[in-house]
Length: 400
Image (cartoon, rainbow, N blue to C red; front, side, top):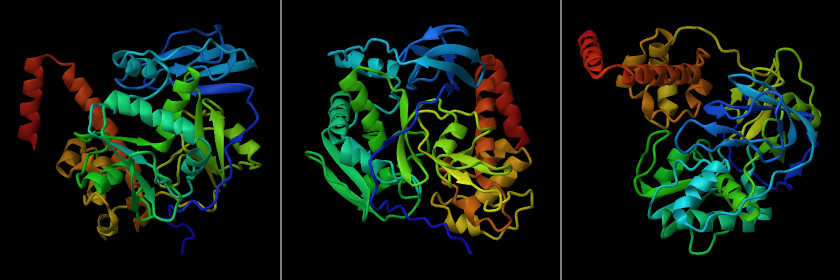
């Protein structure tokens, strides 16, 4: 019997906590290209890397210091002061505003023209309570974010979606909708379905709706009112919500929270259902990190390589109505392309399949591995000459 529950009720939460500033930063730079070198001095707000993916925001130094090392995974900065780079003014031209936000670290990939703006105020996972203090204490900032998105996307309708039982006051000309306070109802795909009655794939966009979380709107509003880039993240650590510098090591945050990490323990970046375990105590948080959870060695479920029993528990509980057990087997035996026939891209990566697995198989890990391998395969194929692509496609069709 487990004490974990799927409730998304947040209850009363205190204000955001600003902790002690770290003396070092390990800034993740995945999908970014560094524009500086080791030994360079940076000020807080200095751009340090440009995004490689369309719509992804650039990276900036959260604090002033000296770049000590750059690896394929992170940039290490030794903090040595509080000097800040000059703020910039948002451009008046709407055509330039979206690009300016991207250069300031805002992810703008889903800021397309649409008639409806959907504000997701439902906690993404149990135990993540960051939306409540933002809506309560930073409402003006969020309203500025809403106004900015309405200008860029030209939206005429707005919905605020909240978990029933949590506080959520409507914005001007906004319709409030409540969903059951049960995970995974806070995931973007299910929020879009609740409003539009239509389904979208993970990573895809609705044809006539823009969805942003309360956290996203806070970042946009903050950039607009200060003229400074995104250098912090809002995350739940234990039972408190914190404003944390990007790149702060997870071991430092755990120590600030009064926790001692023992051998075998895991620090989970995000929530317990979808989060990723930190590789080590020096790994830094990124701007998408929503929480930090400490899982003791004797409390965690040990993933095994046991075979799938075919019991169907994962299928019974899957909100995407697919076959997670079959997908895990395709991934386990490297039949990645076959996984597409079982609709792997319909998976919203909620992690419920792994929770209910009788064999304790790491189903979500297998599915994420298959998606990663398929993305590599598509990238490799797209770089081949056209005639080679056609031949490869014919061979794949014949083998199937």
